[in-house]
Length: 527
Image 1 (cartoon, rainbow, N blue to C red):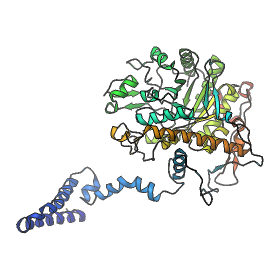
Image 2 (cartoon, rainbow, N blue to C red; image 1 turned 90 degrees about the vertical axis):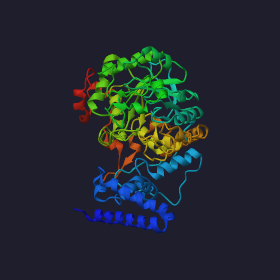
Image 3 (cartoon, rainbow, N blue to C red; image 1 turned 30 degrees about the horizontal axis):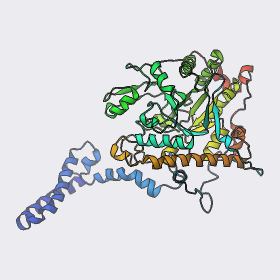
Image 4 (cartoon, rainbow, N blue to C red; image 1 turned 90 degrees about the horizontal axis):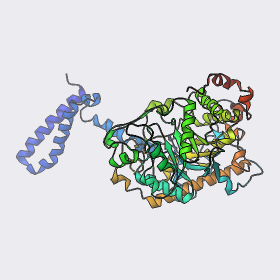
């Protein structure tokens, strides 16, 4: 039995047929215009056979729903989103980044639009005796006594983003920006491409479970190829990726359709063939194994800084790594803590939404663990997770980091507009696509200047705010400098939320109660 919408469609078809006959007899010239009605009628017929329930019940007019869904993200971003409501980055944040990248003033008029009384609002107290931080505090040396080639790093670098996730032009622009601004670019797990090499910017080579760029045909680690590439002057540090915030403990599958000849050459895989990235490393499966593999890479690079990146998950597993440091005597030069709010080109939605630890909770824990085992001064902690502005750096460093990495902030600086089409190969700005027609819109020379400008302006903002708080160096920042407003009651500092740990407390059995159970469960021989 016809439903009401189907009855309307039937009437429309009948009307189209009648009009077609009349025009064919009396005014054939108008049949060209009539063809539009005919096409709509045919479209409605196809809708009746569609697998979409809406189209089957509402032929022709049901398409309006899908048309509106298609443009919904743009309508929301351009017309309905407030200055501070956008996710993952608000319009206000994006505008500040774009202005800094273009070298324009980032001042705003009339007063803040933020809700100071909102739960979760973070802020700091200024000092009546502000300081001016010297330029030397904009950099930090990475490398402990086990490292013979320490690296003088900017406190803000480009976070891990692979060629393949980003276009070649985007990689090239960021690398040239790194060269101009004297900061480093993390390669991401997709190996070192020609675009990373072209402009000579410093590189942090990320090695993940698939060992792209240093692997045998069976996917196992190729030490000789690694040593050949890692010992070039441009590669400054090596980062072992254990997990990332956007999809922790999740492997990946690069479909063969995306494995171009160029990507295959860079990653040491076969063009056109599916490529699996396992969730765990074939080279180790224990905390001790991780550190032994790390030491092996350190020896292969003749003493360059080596560390690892992880999104904090089960706390006793990280404590197991700490126990392994004590048992083996092997200490990483740095640890990158990736927040669960971090981004990626594509990840399962539920992994993005529900797994991993928020960066502002992970940093105090990592800092306390390293302090508790007496090794905090030997290890540089890098924060990676929604770092976009100077105050973001202040918060991260106050909570336990020494420096920061930013990914999406640098993407904005070279043209990203948060279209969120990274996984479709249809990025409208040419940042996250391999489509040559789209990538050519990203002009490397001008965008590299914007990446440099964003870095310099963000670092200056960090230094200015730290000075306004009243510290003479970033090392003086601590949890007491950052306030968090709860849902009820007055704001309190992070110092009141997280336990205080003194150097060596874990070794002297002075473990805070909140950590005792996990410390007892932790093992150097099992994650």
